[in-house]
Structure formats: structure tokens, C-alpha cells
Image (cartoon, rainbow, N blue to C red; front, side, top):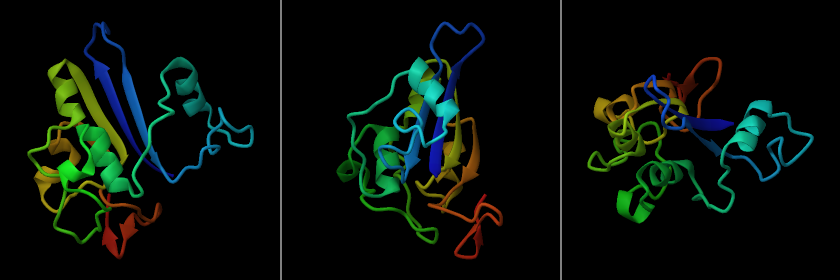
Length: 157
């Protein structure tokens, strides 16, 4: 499972709701507990029961354009990311694009990202903590070895 989880919380007064988005790659329709008893996903099932599940939305064939569209609200035609990025590519989601965490932070939310970024990392300003997130724990490219934290021989964590 490749996942980017955006955690947004609001100050100490909690006057606004918490926002937790999960962007999960490579799952089939029945690969989650609330759709199949064979799958055990208690935490995601709890979010489904207590929150809002977007079920009639479609993603793009690869992950980078899907993530860019989700975070910007703009289609790949407008962001320039129409295919997945490779680890050696000197490319990323254009810096002029405003991302959802930046907008949420202006409303008083605190935003953190966990999981796969896959929107460019060839320069520091393309990484999550320079794109609106206060913190990031995960890897920058499209996939990695979970034990060695490498892809194509390059350390990615």
C-alpha cells in the first residue's frame, strides 16, 4: 500500500473539524474492510463510519498526477504532471501551484504529511515541508524497499 495521509488539526480550541485525507494507491474497490469482510482495516473503517468517504471520484492512471490534482484542485493539463515522476527526474509539481495544506494553514490548521510524496524532490523547495506541510515522514519517490528504504539503489527516506 502506498499512501499519503494529510493530517490537519486546528489549534487548541478545536472549533473547526479535524481533516484527515488518505490518498491510497493500488487498492481495488473491495480492498478495504467496510467493503469486504476478508480485509481487516479497523482504523480506516472507523474513519469511514465517523467521517465522509468520497466514493464517486476518479483518479488518474498513475500516482503523481492523482496526488497533484488532489492537492491543487487542478487537472494535470494545468499542473504539467501528466505521468508519474521517476526518482532521477529533475521535475516536480510547479512551485507556483498553491497546495491545499497552504490554504488550510491560512485558516488556522496545522498540516502534516505521512507516506509517499511522489511530487518531486530534486530541489528542497519541491519537498512537502516547503509546500505547506509542517512536517513530513515518509519517502519522496514512487515506491521503495520498506526495510532498506531504497529505490534503484538510492536512499529515499
